[in-house]
Image (cartoon, helix red, strand yellow):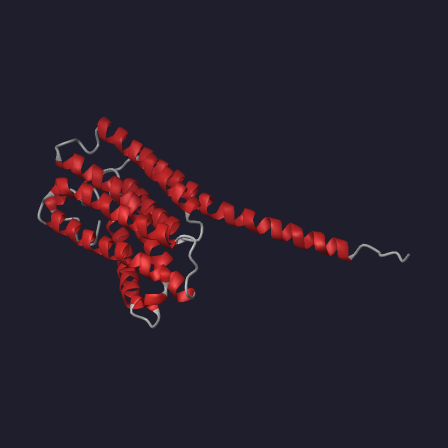
Length: 248
């Protein structure tokens, strides 16, 4: 889930270990996420942070997600593979909890919105794909053939679940632009690895591409529809203004 994990636990998190493992460069997103988490930590100590209900309700889920992420990294590095699935799901749950708590609450300013929604949107989007990849890695650790029919079927099912969850998240959190960006980022690097890596799969690459398109549309379409009524209203007002007026 984090950078530098690919070689741990016998390499089961490596880019060619499973069909849902992205290329190594995909993990560079963690640089942005870690910087955002640092920004969130600093933001809490700004003046008036205690009186800001939005910050106060989000601080504990944020801290929980960081702690659980460290536990995940420890489990992966020490080869405690079975523990990585409940841990990654717990991290995912804590990030969702934070987004639910700040949902509908106005940010104190643009910086706060970018730091919170941006950081945890990227975090959630990445975790949606990472959770599926984590399941595949644990199954691979159990001795399954990464290129076998069973692995192909499981990868398809998990990828469909990820796409559905990402579409639902993009709709539920329409202002959290980090979700579709992170999901599409991860899917693009899965496509890259499945078309250029040692473990190739046109099926998974094609499904990942379709998923990236679906998630993008799920985020963009409501924004387009939201602006359409305003445009029509403006056109209608202009039309009324141009109607000749008759005196009595």
